[in-house]
Amino acid sequence: DIVVASVPPFARIDSDETNHLKSKISHESFVGCDLLLTSEFPQGIDKLLPPDHVCQGTFDVADIALRARPRYHIAPHSVFSQSHPFIHLAASSSSFTPKHNGRFISLAPVVPVNRAKEKGKTGKFIHALGITPLQQMTAAELDDKPENLQDSPYTDESYGVQGKNNSAMEASVGLSEAQARRLMAENSQQDYRWKQKRKEIANNQEADESKTT
Image 1 (tube, rainbow, N blue to C red):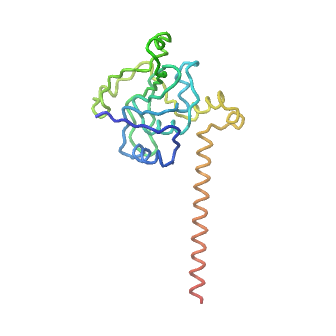
Image 2 (cartoon, rainbow, N blue to C red; image 1 turned 180 degrees about the vertical axis):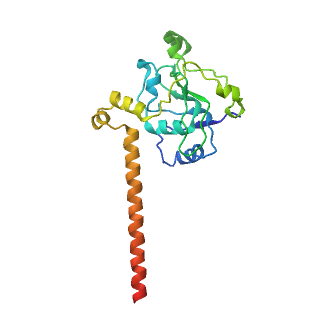
Image 3 (cartoon, rainbow, N blue to C red; image 1 turned 135 degrees about the vertical axis):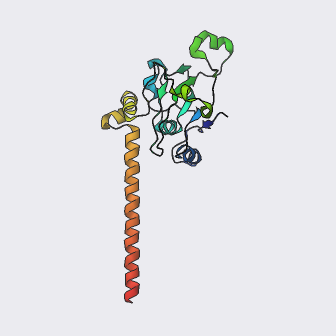
């Protein structure tokens, strides 16, 4: 069966809307999915698209795409476009290295057929895919790498490129959204650990005081 993952519009990491999906795609046994459907572009994908077809992406969608490792990631846009195939990176939660490739496809808005034809290929709002489910692909199919295979767009280097192009704030501080979010998460975890440590110390002091009395 084809495995399809979808993300609600404007969903964010660690929200109630994405926690269930994130738990599945972060599991150590998860290999990848056939289709990922989102309403937004992933941050970083612009480096694999024509300059006039790019769209401001979000780190939340990029992080989900990085973990979901879809063969095809589809999102709406003002024009039809598709990226070169790219490699998937191994997730930190898994010891397995992905062998299948990924592609990103944007679909144009649904309009009357005559208007779509006027735009040519960029007006396509329907795109046919012949998909063999990932779980049924042979070793030979997985090892078959196209000549135009690109590096993964979901890296700090790619995020930084989009930050410099589209966000004056990110460019001025020298951090991509991905890097800034990771620093915030690390600080939050450190703060949580320190609060837990203080709570443990306070509990020990109360226990010692109760013993002396």
